[in-house]
Amino acid sequence: MEDTLRIPKSKIGILIGQKGSTRRDLEKTFGVTLSIDEEGSVIVSSEDGFALWQATKAVKGIGRGFNIDAVKKLKKEDYDLIVINLESVVGHKSKDIERYKGRVIGQGGKTKKYIETATNTEICLSGKTVSIIGNSADAHHAKEAIGIIIDGAEIKTLYSYLYKVRKEQEESELLGI
Image (cartoon, rainbow, N blue to C red):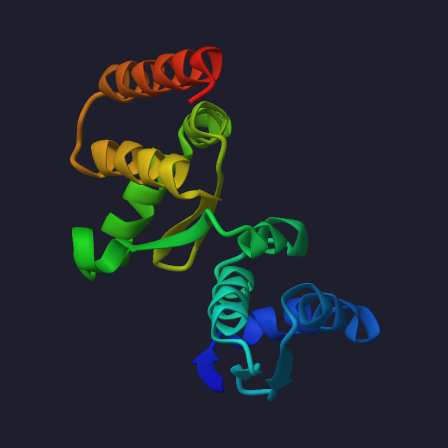
């Protein structure tokens, strides 16, 4: 089985790594074979459909700007990659996209870092997208938090939501859920 996808040309070197190290690491971690061309076309091959699916998400993650350590987390069954296309949410104007990316980042990166910390996820902004890696529930919470920002809510609304999420996580941990 195989899956073909494209990543930005600027990310090909990152996907391959120094002397092919990242490529080999991904192939070993996910049990797949990667064929990469200089135009950004990547063919992911495997006899195992689940490994193919996981590795395809990892390659997409590299294409969205995540590092190798972040995408290797996608090997875990309950981890996911969520990509939010800002263009489909806020329109095609580059100044609008940049403004919303700025809102997600926040002053000095504070908002992005707070979302990552509160939801135990990693967030990457690249091009016209905001991407999230984390376990499925946490990634969903991060997506909701980013949605709050995109909807134009005040930052205090975001912080209130994240505080609630954090409290629920702490209660679940205490109860062993």
